[in-house]
Image (cartoon, rainbow, N blue to C red; front, side, top):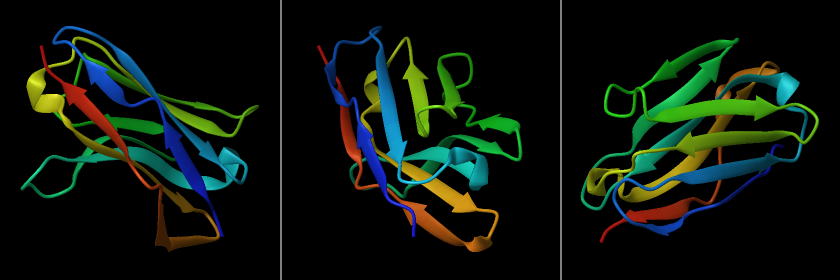
Length: 117
């Protein structure tokens, strides 16, 4: 079992920055994939950024603005979000799969990000 707790969401003006954190109950070195998804009102959940076996992937909509990283010492996954736009408004979810069972996804509870003036 892996438990994930997100934090760092909030209200920010367009052009601002936020850093999301995802604290994991286990070592992130055991994660086959870790990433951030987001879901805007009335839309499907979509991938924002992920690290899979060391390979980083970003959605086109966030490339150049978002940075995903992992901190092994603190078992935490981060998403640094810069130059935020109103269309980035969504609930952001942390997601991981472990090497021991790559077919089972784990999700956090989500954190709201609102970009508005």
